[in-house]
Amino acid sequence: MDEPLPAQSPLDRPIVIAANRLPVMRTEDHGWTPSPGGLVRALYPMLRESGGTWVGWTGDPDDAAEPFSVDGVDLHPVAVTADEIELYYEGFSNDALWPLYHDALRESTYSIEQWDAYHAVNERFAITLANIAPENSVVWIHDYQLQLVPGILRELRPDLTIGFFLHIPFPPVELFTRLPWRTEIIQGLLGCDLVGFQRPTGAANFIAAAHQLLDAEHVDDRVFHRGREIRAGVFPISIDVAEVEAMAAGRATRQHVSRIRARLGDPEVVMLGVDRLDYTKGIGLRLKAFAQLLEDGRLDPARHVMVQVATPTREAVEAYQDERAEIERLVGEINGRFSSIGLPVVHYLYQTLPYDDLVALYRAGDVMLVTPFRDGMNLVAKEYAAAHIDGDGVLVLSEFAGAADELTDAVLVNPHDDRALQDAIVEAVEMHRHERRERMAGLRDQIRKSDVQGWAHRFLESLADAGRSE
Image (cartoon, rainbow, N blue to C red; front, side, top):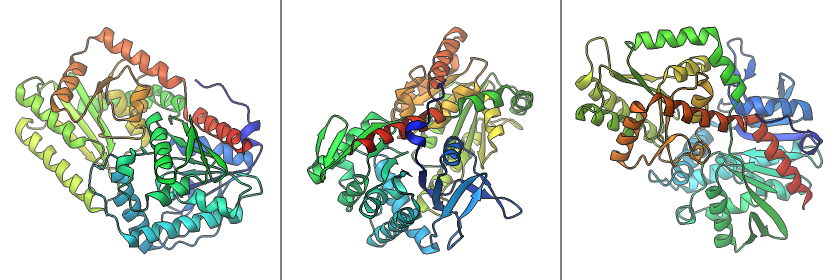
């Protein structure tokens, strides 16, 4: 596990975080509470310690809320209208950028109206940051919804040290250049002192795009543009390992695991998928592979069951509605063919589960299937390993997930190859206990090397160094 890092480099100045959403959610009494998730837990204490602020949207359309504080952290809302939610968020961010950045898995929509909304919201964020950031402070901007903010903010506040972290992949130049506003996006990111990526390929793709589109010179991880030096760094994000392990070890979790397996009919092997219901996650191919293995007799519905949790997301976007319909059709077809009365072979949950329920499911799962077509990281893979404090269990992992760079003791697979995916599932199911434990030990050793707090410290220290090099 990471040793505590000295605070003097990133935390001797106020930190201002900017993300699409504020790190809080409304409570039943109309108050606010911090959102669940490792990123919020990692950054919240840093903001509190540095006297910093988090800038973002409340999640409600046309919400012009005044600044407020939750648990000692100042929060500054940015209003987003209902039309902008449709155009900036559901439109340009998730119907143009998202599919493009994930290998153009679906055709992107390129709409000037959506682009104008994206630019307007990014400009609003940048002006807000310029107005509230203390002199010479550190601003850390997050993710693909806000890629124009650094460039606009740099013009408004050249005194700031500006960092950006992209949580999703950055595409190869030949895909990225399809975007009509490709140059504007690169110019926006070049307003940073440091741009962070999950994988080395993301950093390399960004550098190549800056060179091709803007003729920017580069040496190793440094890009030179308009008299400034911009660093492109690799910072694979992680999880709160200690928290997951503590939750997994609790008595309530152990009892929950026993109940889960009993309700599943005490099968020999429980296969598990936990994903947002997104077309990038490969849920359909996973289900088809499982069905084919049942059809071929390589798996037995009396001994092998699958649990698939699909968390609702972007339900107003047509592509996600289509994906849900297809997944539910496949689940019904498989259960209709291979289940027995009272014992479905696929247990499907289209809902958001509490985190303690997820950890119990991780522990109950003998084989974890993480098979995205493309993923920036995929923290589910790391959470599964952290939860398996018993040292058993097998992770089947797509080589196109960022986690594959670190979790090399998983059974790595190309999810586009039907036969390879089927073989990987069978390999995991039939793996000898000695090999399972050896591989899980390797996975757990790896995730202990870096937790989410260490990730945040490393980024901010690198950002402070980059800012000093100006």
